Image (cartoon, rainbow, N blue to C red; front, side, top):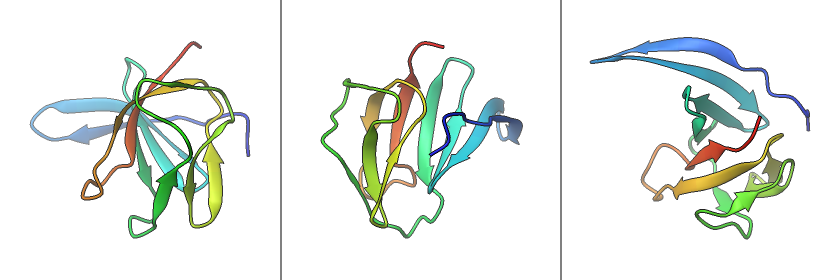
Length: 101
């Protein structure tokens, strides 16, 4: 796993213009807002996933595996906190807050 995330600035036009940064890590896509709130989606939306002993409002340390998808464990190269876990009917996996710099 890479220790660095390469964020790409992008825009989405809708009713309001949203500015966010986008990155791919392993099998997931991250969409980060300027306030460090980040939405996480699976690249393959038909894939199954399971959270690995993590719960809402718990700090997850850098590079700790927090999810498993397609028999591969995934961690993120920064500390974060899970704000919301999605229901199975949602397009995203979870919403996180990136902690620290």
